[in-house]
Image: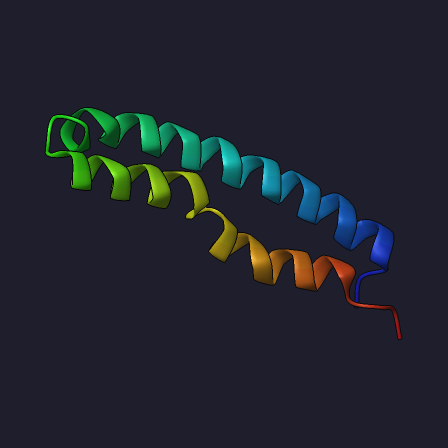
Length: 68
């Protein structure tokens, strides 16, 4: 079992990588989504803006878990 300090370090690096990769993917898919109708554009902005939160939640829970 890793100590909390190490989990927080690993989690912080992983969160930074997650956000960077998510932003790059959002930029890569943006041209296809943003040439569509207004509803598709709105859905794209919602998913691209908030979609990284779901994969980050278990990581944050793992980071905050107390030591034994």
